[in-house]
Length: 273
Image (tube, rainbow, N blue to C red):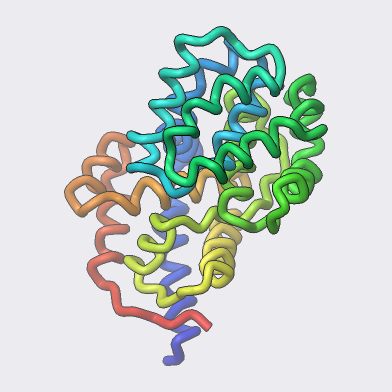
């Protein structure tokens, strides 16, 4: 059997296990993400437009952190926002967040990115847009963010910023938007891909692999998007077998944890061509 055939079998097995997850559990998985847990409260306090801009710009700077994102990034931003008045403009949001990024790694670069986005016409437009307008224009906004930041649309920070924007829409109760954004390929996604036995090194190949797995899942449940799948992969990547089984018990689906554990235990590295 060729490497491609082995890889296809493993992708099908993985999609079989994932497809057993009910839609309400997928929604709960997304709600476990630090960008949801730590930021949800500001959706109502700020209003949708300012909140969406906040989520995008913090997503753009979620890289090369001083620790785990769920410990060293999102909770710290939450604390700053909790003791501050809601910003009335992108400029006020810049002034609010700038001191935090001054203490971060690659501070000059992150402050430059903060200003580049928040001083852009796009940020000003999104500031006053309702969720329905953002939902309708979602893919165009993706292109505009990439152009504003002088990056490729599939770049990790751009894809993650779009996931954060997608989460802001979900929090606002808006579900009908076209999230055909690729998985943000960070260190956890790379690690979990290897743990599953896929021998892929290029980010492009990792994106393609998870796009294929998502397509298989969507054949059975069209409501699943890359927001759900990325949230799931990102959370699982940091778990050992014990944590993984507890995670699925908490979600009410212990059998799925057993299925993923079996796949991880049977790992033999397969080159994906």
